[in-house]
Length: 270
Image (cartoon, rainbow, N blue to C red; front, side):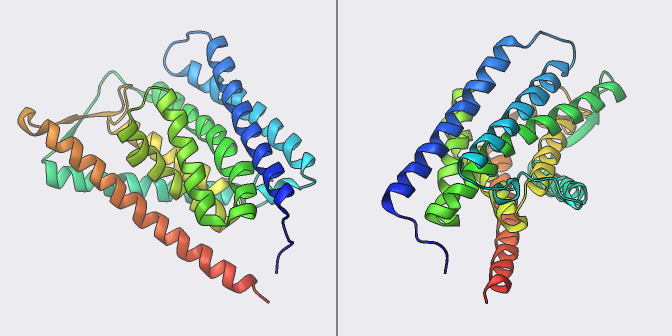
């Protein structure tokens, strides 16, 4: 049986989570406004590194405020963190491949190489998506998710964080449909991975691999290693196929991590 959380402690904790989240958004806005315009994705690399460092600093401050260790909010770097990061990256790449296979078969899509994108651009894109994923996981699936999990349990915590994650992306220009079906669904996977592994290495790997993989196959605004070729008359239905297949793939992976979470919770019970 865990410690009893009084009404005052509950609302104090919720206010601190809200303060942390708002501060992270302010950091992102301020850093984005200060970023120089650089070629390729170097601006995103610098933005990701600077905001990740500042968000980690906020995590340290708020964890100490709550008298918690970094491992209690999933932000500690352990000896197996790099292995979990690599495994998460591999799983994320497999998810991209699965979703692309569904789209390719159903939508009759094929991919052709983009000759203008070379090794340097690929390395820069990989670095950008890795550090940006680090920032987002620290800002949402670190301190906020773990504290809300303590107050409300994993399911309500997941829903609240997914909503906050979607709102941030709407503020960044996403439509509500893409934010709720796309961004929030991804948040559930990354959050479940964070809870199941009790750390951020796995979700950072998943998140980075998904975004980098989507960039590789032309799924981002910036040209990737390949670009899609599909018949003009099925372009609109293809977008629905892409979204539906994305939700299916993400939910299957979320269920897998949920099963891992339940298994670990059962072994922890005395």
